[in-house]
Image (cartoon, rainbow, N blue to C red; front, side, top):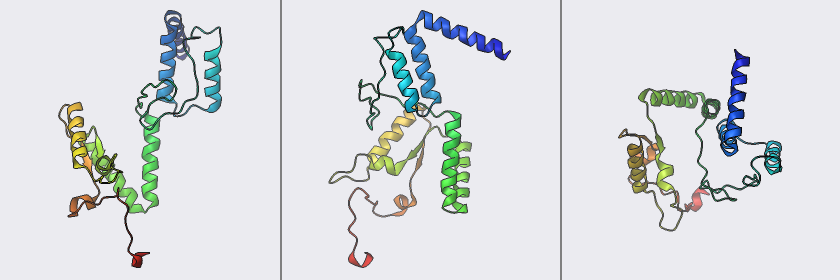
Length: 196
């Protein structure tokens, strides 16, 4: 059965290559994006060399080169907006275990608390979890920048729209909920001489 499945997959791939070389390459690149976190330099060089070969059905329309990607996910070579792919299950598991290990390294209660919080969130089925402080301070690192509740509200409204009206979970550190004045980490803090 496994041999038959592999043979069928090869036949399907050969048919796609014959019908649409660009479609075949796009399917390979999409698969790479979903299953490979980072292309090794050797694999990147091989891919670039293969695409540059004259006998390939892609030359000269396709080319591969190393590129920097901006903080906003734009390719430095072609200017394309690169969308972030979802985590595959193995990546999600590694991320989860890494977070739990980091919390446990701060103390056993931290690890237990984070695990309990994760289970609580999972039971409630939130589609989105928002780090409110990071959203509120985004792009606020200028003179007069501040914690922006408006930014948080705009994001929450957009996420509700995307999820058919379901509310996202907004997470904020306790200090933002109990302080009379919201801390403003975008401004330099002057440390009194007795604290130095």
